[in-house]
Image (tube, rainbow, N blue to C red):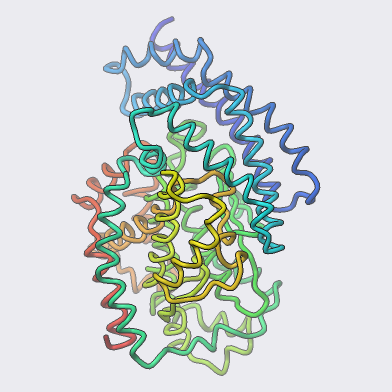
Length: 499
């Protein structure tokens, strides 16, 4: 086999892998959106077959020989080809350590777990979900032991979601946030509180859907390649390539802002994915490099742009058309309402200042369960205790507590810290962007094109070509800087609350 033939085979291999991901992703997406409630077992059978074939393709002798040959010739490969081979070999060497029957069983478990979690949340019934969640945590511990026996299991999974991340880094980052956020929240609580009355009123679902579609248009998403649906917990996913992206949301009949900001958040994910260079399509480089960088984009659009005075001022007249009760309020009322600092129960609806405390709670719980220091059975009680300790709020039930997020049912152990990291990354990206883009002027005019162009040039186009730390260095010339994020939050609270 010549080097050129091997390169062609590399692209063919990735196209096949992408096809399996597409099929399995579409089945999972269907299950989380429009599939009839009694079809989980049917989907599970199909996923079992597909995941077994995917496993065989990924770990087969022919695939391994191809990648090892290319790796031995890496000096003759382009930068993109080297990265493809590295990522594929990394994934394959990990997958080879996991017995095929266990890999397949885990895919079936996750399919069942999502269906059970949705019912458990709806019925406030943690007990029905507990056995599956125990299996998910146990499987994650076991798989980490297979793949990295000399590494702490939780460190392994943190690194899988954000290359280079471990508990020590998380602890240091969260300690820095805690030292300044806790006293900031206390100071804000002592000030006259901002009213959020304008966020509550009659908001028919069809009007909220119209707003969702309008936001997608304003933000520059292509409806020919980005689909939209509803689900229990909003998410965004790519199906096969960046040419097929799906965004979801969840509507509340008396609070349009809940869906509004979830849509802006998910649109940020979709912009990142669809912004990959077309020559990366159907390869392992297609789409975002890490969950931290991914969340930097979603949180960037949701908060740094979406909650800005410039954008809320632009959007408010359109909101008044969609929701007539808003005509009694001003754009300034709306701006202050969506930036109100108020400890709350639900992470996805939390304000910017208290948000990271929600993430810290999940991080602490995951870390302890993975270490065997906390049982899954005791999660609900510990969740309630930490919410009282960190946020000073009482959790009335598991539906609004331990069952609120979909991440654990999807097996995403180690994902949550990415939300806090992404929030901090986003502030640093915005500071750099302002050097060459009139961000506020763009937002005031509802013109996202210059903003999107900057992100595409500096971040999106590269997909997974560079590691997170390399992206940060290329764009900023520095790594994570929590001080920039904390200063941003403090300045916003000073402007709104005078603290």
